[in-house]
Image (cartoon, rainbow, N blue to C red):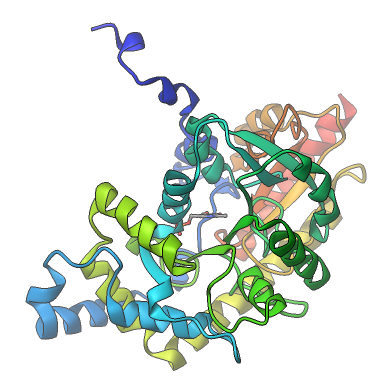
Length: 404
Ligand SMILES: Cc1ncc(COP(=O)(O)O)c(C=O)c1O
C-alpha cells in the first residue's frame, strides 16, 4: 500500500502535537520538565475518587456501567450550571452539555459551526490544541495581538470589514502566556459581540486557579449582563473542565451555551462518541457535589501553585539573563518567556535537554511565522526543589546562548 495516497486531503493539516512529542522526551525520570500543562499529581484527590467509585458502584452499579444520554448526567449538568451561575445570572442545566474534556468541546464547536475557508479571529499566540483541531477545516485565522492585559480588543473592529464566523480566545490565565483579559476589555469585547452579532468561544480551563489580583467575571456573564439577560441566550459558547481542578484522567468537561447551540452539539457528539463515560461522570459528580471538599481542594491547589509560581518567578529573576523577559500570571499553570530575537527556542530546547530540563517552544502557538524566540514554562507540576534546580540550569543555558 502506498500510504502517501490513502489519507483524506484534510489530514494534510494534521500533525502530532509538538507538546505531546516533547512530553515523550521528558518521560525519563532525570528530566525536570516544565513542558506539559500537568497538574501536580501529589494533589490528586485519589482517596476521594476511590471512595466515590466504591459508593456509586455499590449504589448505582447497573446504571453507571450502562450507556447514557448524550447531554450528560442530569445531576452533573445541574451542579455545573449552579457553579457557573452568579447572582442574577442563572444558568439552566438545559444549557450544559457534558463533553470528554474541554478539548472535545473545542473540537465539536468546529464541527457544528465552521465551513472550509471560514474566517476566525484568534488572539496571537493561542492554544495549540485548538489549532490542531480546527486547522483541517482550512480556515483563515485572523490574529489579534496580545499584551499583559490579554487580547487587544480594539484590534478586532478593523478585521470585521471581512465576514468572520467567530472569535476564539482563552481570556483567563491564557495558554501559553498566563495573561488575563481585563474587565474593561471583557466589556468592550462583549460590546463587539453584541454590535456585530458575532459568536465567541470562551475556553476557560484555568479560571478557578487564581493566586493573586481581583477575580473577573467570565465573558459569558459579561455579555449576558450587557444585554440585561439573566440566562444563557447570547453569543458566547463557554468551555469548562474538571481537568485542572480535579483530575485530567477522568476526561470530564462541559460546554455552556444557548440551547440551539447545545442541541446541534448533541447531534455532533452523538455521531462522535454517543456520550461521555457514564462511570467518569458519576465519579466526578460524587466528588464535586461535596461543595466543602471541592472548595477546600481548589484552595489547596491555589496555595501550592501560588508558591510554585512565586518561586519560579524569583528564581528566574535571579538566574535569567537581563535581555530575557517573561509574563507574570495571576493564575493558571503557565508563563511565557521571550528571548532576544536572535535566539531560537527549539535550538535552546536541544541544549536544555542536554542539561535534562524541558519546556515547550511557542512558535506552534502563533499564527504566522513568528514566536521562534518564545517558550512556555509550566509551574504547577514540578516540586519546589526541582523548580529551583531546573530554572538555574535553564538560566545557565540561556546565558551561554546569549554570549554565542
Ligand atoms: C486552553 C485549553 N483548552 C482546552 C484544554 C483541554 O483540556 P481538557 O480536555 O483536559 O479539559 C487545555 C488543556 O491544556 C487548554 O489549555
